[in-house]
Length: 361
Image (cartoon, rainbow, N blue to C red; front, side, top):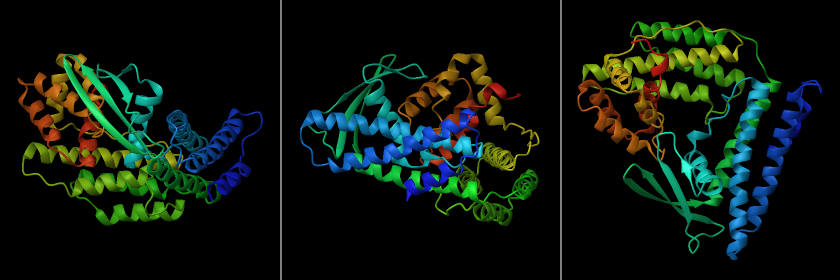
């Protein structure tokens, strides 16, 4: 089905042959078709036992999946003027893929991280097969040495990629063939934000936005589309209850932050310039930003704090907690983050920490 849909998208290529996007779209489609063939060839070789042939197949699979994901992002940007159809980080295996690919295919002998550490990876050859890639990565940061072991099912990677890419391609095709001209979506999103400012979470309006978007854009209910994801973040935040007043204020801020992002994204979909929405920072965040301002070298450590699965999430968080012993509010915020086990909660707190450079405090 995917190849058929790609052919249909190719036939809808409305760019002039003098325009670079005409050829960029064709390149994306060709890459995605080749990806299908490579994945099928890998599966046909799944019973291979010769290690040298196994390794070249695994290397090829990882690189192929990485190229294919880039093609999905580019095709979404070219055809829809945004990348909201693509949200592969919502799939655990595909989210891990970027770390796996970089560790093994990209920089196994010396991988540097923004937060200041380096990593070295070695494959466990006697345990690696066509079905399972097994390797370990050694992380060094200052005097700390951490070893992380991974075992990855190649068939799970292929299956998850196939599910997600089929859905994205279908969504792009639906957009090209059922585009609707309306301002209703962004108007509703702005209304939701304005009601939220008054401390009322209008759940029925949020569901109306969700249903309207699904129906007009023909979005599958199980899609990881970024608009749908933002709505799920808002639902999560509304159900997140805390007794502490500082934390309650912070949750309110995160709700407004996600509602503002939803309004911005729906405006972009409808080719409208969104209004500038200014948010007042909660006291915990102001205190944390003052802590960063003391030493902006600490900024390197906040880049991972929105990603629960990042190899340096825990070590960067622990580093900042050691640094902020004299800052009670900043320490309170980081402790709160450290105690979260839900990746959605980690994302909403962690991503809000990263607005330092654009914040007024």
